[in-house]
Image (cartoon, rainbow, N blue to C red; front, side, top):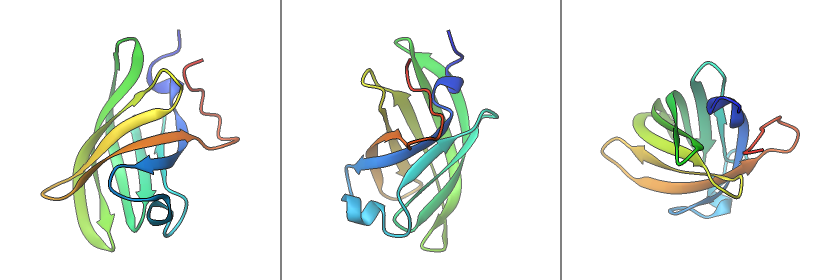
Length: 120
């Protein structure tokens, strides 16, 4: 069986968020979340960019990560935490939290041609 983080390494397209519609998510560029093999990653949506420090494990046999992040929101410094898990339908679901601010659930699918392995 592949290591948990190897199964979701790569760039995912954020296709849904609880707090914002797709036009907002894709304001600057297509919304994304990306995981690298070294336990870091990044995400971007609306005018928010963040770099993540991930801790991988498994929940119910599925790859799962909790992370902290630092970055910016409309060029203002921002930070927070979050989590993501590979769902049974091979989408990525999770939640992003802004320190002392908003939070939102999200759902993401692999970007075509990025090599994300999903649950297979």
